[in-house]
Length: 246
Ligand code: ATP
Image 1 (cartoon, rainbow, N blue to C red):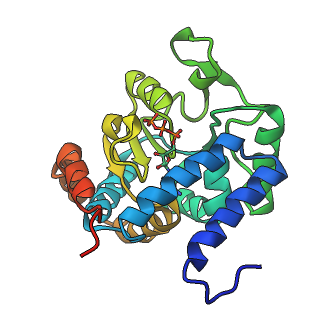
Image 2: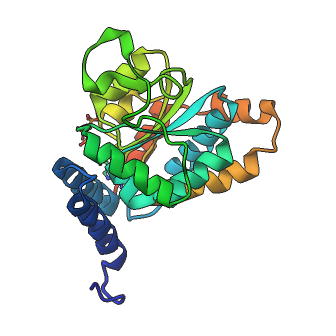
């Protein structure tokens, strides 16, 4: 039991959720390592949504609302940390949710699908019963996508994606939005919009903004996307790292 007055309470709660997801069997051991890396970057940005992340979130929401088929990709970490929040975002933006695991096993996929069901979401894609296709006939588990979801999507949100998969999706002609606390990762560099923030803060903020934007006209949304420059914004994200204690 973590005492509420512990100075690192919020962070320890997240760590506990990730640890429990591993014990429950739907998060790979490497998912815990990825979380640890994320914690470090989060510490350095002050565990808050910095201005550049906010700008990226606005552009990301606009791009998702403009999409014909948008998909929110989920893995064990996102399920452990933000299951209700990602369901809410799917509803606000009329997106689909698809399971996409780096270390895909039937057991992990079933467990994640069951958790989404328990949280009121029945239509998850990428399950063991789904029609999974291979991009460019690359027979690699990282190249699979649901025929009804990522395979036909034009815009994909990939919270915590690895660089290879992001590249593969990009080469398949998709617009990629990532949420990754590391502005230097290959995923951040490769994405069309990179949100350097923690999924636990970014996803609810995206829903809030989507709620406000979904009644705006197309031109309003297009303007936001057109005025966003990912390379410049990533530099700003990097500059917001507090590496010196003043
Ligand atoms: P790449 O292949 O893109 O260079 P990588 O090899 O570091 O990146 P992974 O280890 O698969 O890729 O990805 C983990 C990434 O997710 C890390 O960059 C980490 O900072 C980030 N991350 C971990 N937890 C969170 C979180 N809660 N919110 C946002 N990002 C996170």
